[in-house]
Image (tube, rainbow, N blue to C red; front, side):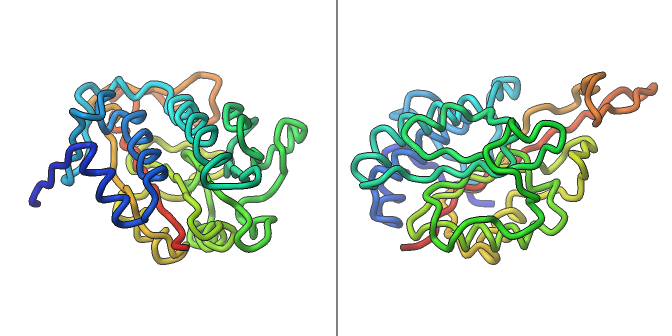
Length: 254
């Protein structure tokens, strides 16, 4: 595969040309930096079209916190000022007990999930296998981290994402390609980055801004947590050794 190398400034220029929005392009660049796809210094950043591999896979760290911190800056400086005259709705699909509290700053942050054991822990209790409880074109930003693999029919959720997202809205979706079995409460699917893009462009009708993979652990003895329902049975082979995650950022065209 031919490799395309872009400086960070050139990447922003290309995104502005494609979407006509410098603020959104800069936000995407920040997201790429936060998940270690680009180095912290944007002027020296490189984007490799053949796929993403961090210099040290263990730099993966707390992905949710990294992205949350980036989005705080984005919503403060852009969404609540230049881009929107009203408080934008930030929808965290499958956000559990609201780990993304940082999203509350500058947005109407809504966690959509289902926890029968603690219904008070989630903003809005909802079965994600059913239509989303929002009007058409109501949501400004959709975030979903490691959820799609648990959805019985992910193409239906993709259709719902496309329905509720505003024109010009952004969706940031991550899921797994190679990972151990982890039912919450079920574990149905695995996606390549190309498969994830295909799902969201065809069923959600989003336009791809970014879709890559990241290898976080390889040939590493990952055995899970003893208290976790996805605990891996330990035998002489050890634990699960391949951990690949895929990421998609897309827009609903205005």
